[in-house]
Structures are given as structure tokens and as C-alpha cells.
Image (tube, rainbow, N blue to C red; front, side, top):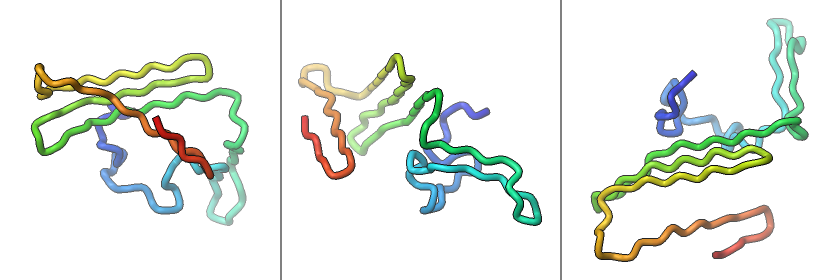
Amino acid sequence: MGNGHGGGLGHGKAELPDALNPISGIRELGIFDSSTQAVLTADLTSPDKLEYLIKRELSNTNGVDALLRINATTSRTQFRLTASGLVPACASRVVVLHQQAGCECKP
């Protein structure tokens, strides 16, 4: 298992193929043997459990660095943002943009 510091590129440090990106769009998974017979299959459209985990480093050219962590299940959500390099006397704010298919929601 990884430590979540792959920068979104996984253990091989390569980007996901276009067909798998975004990973949330995967609806079915199949493992096939050499004669193309299905050995294992999974329907991912109606999972009995859900856990969503994001760990991502955020940085910019202004010297501000941050670590974002979102961990959610069907019963709880944890959002953590740790930042350094912000100017103490200036007001800072967190803005979350959310978009669903066919609908753009603005804060």
C-alpha cells in the first residue's frame, strides 16, 4: 500500500490512461485470463460501501504550500487543509467549487 504522496500519479509515477480518467467514472472492472475468459468481475455502479480519500499537496509560485486531505464515507466526512507561507496580516479564505453533470453550482 502506498503512503498517499504519489502526487496523483500512483506507484508507477505515470498518469492514468484517458479511458480511466477520472477514476470515478469507472463502472465495471474485469480480470480476464489468457483465453479472454472473465476470472473476476465487479459492478461498481451500486457499491455496498463507499470510502473516498484524497491526499494532495498544493503549492504555488508565491511561496504558499498546503496539504489537502479529504476522507469521506457514507456516514462522515473529514476535511483538513494545512497551509504555510500565508501572510499573517492578510485575510485568507477557502473557496470550494462544485460541479455536477448539467449543473454548475457557485458558492
